[in-house]
Image (cartoon, rainbow, N blue to C red; front, side, top):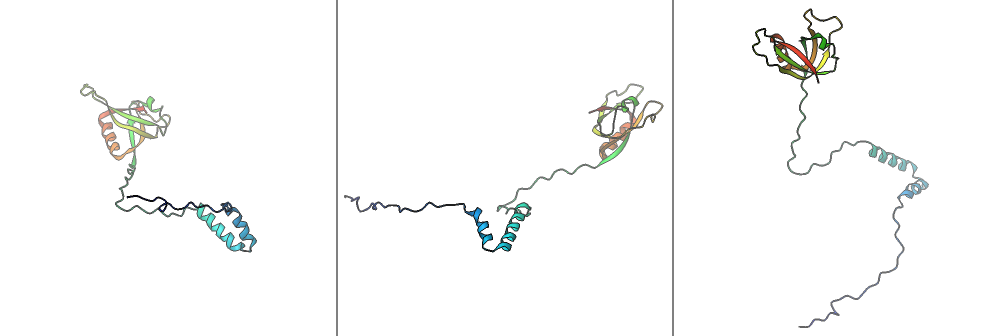
Length: 170
């Protein structure tokens, strides 16, 4: 079986000569349109295009087909309450300013020396108010108002009854 290659190959062809193609005449298109007397429609079209380019159209892109992934919501902020706390050392309270962050430490107030382990009852509480000069108790304590979550305020109130409270600045 012999094949003839001359019949299966097309003859060579030549590319005709042509002028170069010039792209990018868009910048002259507006001037040409204005010269032809279409001023009002051209200006309206240009203003509309500019406004659409600048404005947020609010159109969301089409969602891909299929189940959409559940987005995790950020946790809701915990509402804060004002908790008045009596700090045993008034000199320490004079160092505080509104806006400071403090840890409140409860040390048991037992003359018999039963449980002597101190514990942190509020971490990172924000100081809302401090006493004015001369607003301290005769035993040296001072009242400070802290902004804390409601659950922490209940723990602070309970610890204030059974323990002496101290603060450390964070």
